[in-house]
Length: 421
Image 1 (cartoon, rainbow, N blue to C red):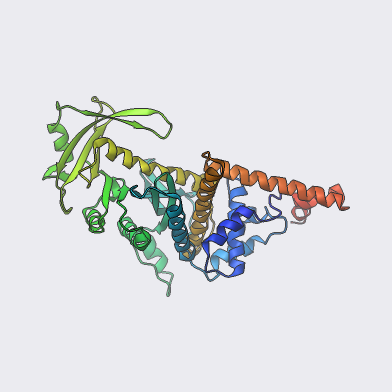
Image 2 (image 1 turned 180 degrees about the vertical axis):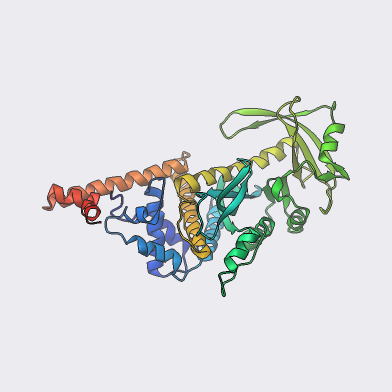
């Protein structure tokens, strides 16, 4: 059934703000995809997306836009980074607020029978505690004041996956990069965009807490707040040994407000010492939900001036990335691609994250205009409602102009095309 008769003004306005270095036909495809990805139901194959427009293009045109059209994902990614920093500089008025950069990775699950999609392979899912087939990517997000955006992302391929792809290639061979290397590349790309003189904190979980990465971040003048594995050593002793030694000592109680609005109190002990390979002293928190908890969680902070509550409160900024993953995977179809080549899949990811940035931008625009907060889901609902109204209006206008009701029904439900197929 038709869902779009004309392009959303919101989409056109947003894409125009990016000043993309694409041809006009390519820009129109970006606008088209931004519209249909918001409107489409859960599964977003190219055929389903193309069928949503009344006078749209064939699904093969959309496939060619990803497969053979001469543009690269960086043309969207870098334009989005520049736009995000411009937008945040306009919105954030308090110069003392620190900038938080969050790093995480996520799996977009695919069917275990998938064979031909180059970015899809077996990965260990730390949430499910099992191996899952899917595409994996590393994401860099930013928090500044009350605002959050996804900044940059990179597809992650296992070393065996890179070798498998390169065996069939003579040109455009891929290079393997670990998740830590991808993280450093993402951070390097935004250094020139960061406003001078602002305190910067990089947040990530224990899987990214390598001495080499932390040292590089400290060399940039930034701080790290991160999870820490229990086998890491502080001042020559494993964290598990510190936990045993501190038994019987007093806990500090740290109340924190959770994402659901409730408050939870954590029982925390604090240590200061040195981690191998990391310059200067660091602070480590041993946090648990109560004195009888089986094992604590360990958190590292290179800024020893922060209190226990402030360290954990700032670490909570990572939650927004989990919200992003929910939207890109369940609402915007990040894992629904059926494109085969690595390069085409990169472009698909670039378009999906462009739509996510657009939704955040509209959230903030709406909030400033109407003086109340809104959510990504509400923005999507308003866009869908606007399109439904336009479809109904266009159908009524065609009947008023002389078309029969049956003709309009066939045209808008695309019944003729379905029967011909």
